[in-house]
Image (cartoon, rainbow, N blue to C red; front, side, top):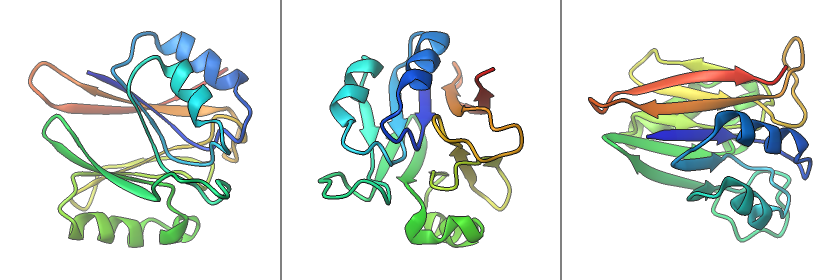
Length: 160
C-alpha cells in the first residue's frame, strides 16, 4: 500500500500535480490542511481515496480539525498541527498522540519537513508543497509504504 502525504498547498497546485505524476499509483492521499477550499480539485487529482483535515487558513471550512485513521496495523492521527503549537516543537502533539494510543502522528503547518521515530511514535510533517520554508526551499511531500509483512516505511521526498 502506498500513501502520499502532503500539506499546505494554499491553492497553488502546479507542484502537487507534478508530485502526483512523479509518485504514480497511490492507494490513499492524506492532506494535512491549508487546502483553502480546493478539496474537490485535490480529490480529483488524487484519483484515490482522500483524507483531509482543516488548517489554520481553511476559513469557513466544514473539514474536521483532526482525524484518527487505521492504516494497516497502524493507528494514525492526522491534524494540521497549529492547535498543538508545532511551530514551537513536537512535544505537545507527540504527547497527545501517545495518550490516544496512536502509532503515527502526521501534521503540517510549519512548512518544514520533519520525520522522527523516537519516543514510541512516528512524527511526520511532509513540509509544504507550495511554500517551503526549510533550507533550500524545495517543495516536499512524504510517502508511507506498507510492505508485504505489514510494516510501514516512511520517506520525505523533494521536487527538484
